[in-house]
Length: 226
Image (tube, rainbow, N blue to C red; front, side, top):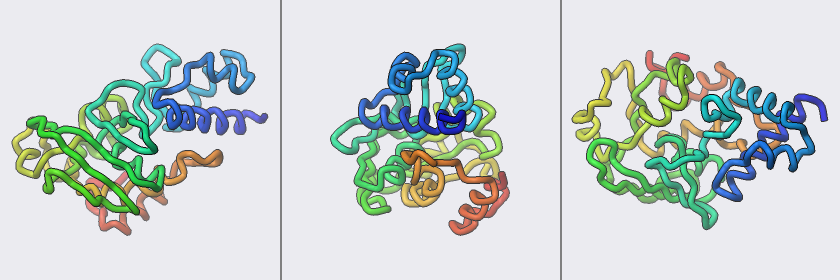
C-alpha cells in the first residue's frame, strides 16, 4: 500500500471497528489487522488527527473520538442496528442518521436541567422529538471548534429541552457567537460531513463546499463564516 492508501485503510478500519464493536480499536489491533508496525500505525493516527478524522487521548495513541463515535461515556447515547453507541456531542448524535442512512434513536438530557430527551430519526427527518421544543445548541463559533475539539464536543454542543432552558443556562452566549438548531436542521447540516464516513475514499468537505452547503440551508450570517 502507498502511504495515502494506508491512511485511508486505517481510517476505514477504525470506523468499521467502532460500528461493529461500539469501541475503537487499539494500536495492537490495527497492527495485526493491517500488518503494519507500531511506528507506522502511530504515524497514521497522527495523520488522521491532523486531517480531523479522529482525536486521541492526549499524550497517547489511544483513540478517543472518531466523529461521530466516542470511546468514553457521554450524555449522548445512540441506538442503531441493534447496538448502543456513544456520540461525542449533540450534533454527532444526530449525525449517526446521516452516516448510516437508517433509523436511529438518540437518548440524552437537557444540559440545563437533566430532563430526558429522546429523538428518533427515519428517512432523513426526526419522527419523534421529546420534549417537542428540544433544540441543539452550538455555543462556540465554527472558527473556534478545532482549537480544542475535545473541549468543544464535550462542553459546547448540547441539547436543551427548550429555548427557555438554553437561555437559563450558564452556557448561553450572545446570538452572534452561538447557534440554535432543530434536530432536522442538524441532520441537514450533517449531510456532506457524515454521509460517506464509512467509505474507503471518504474526504472531509472543503471550506468552499461547506460554505455552499451552509448557504443552501440559509445559514449565511456572521456565525457561519469559516
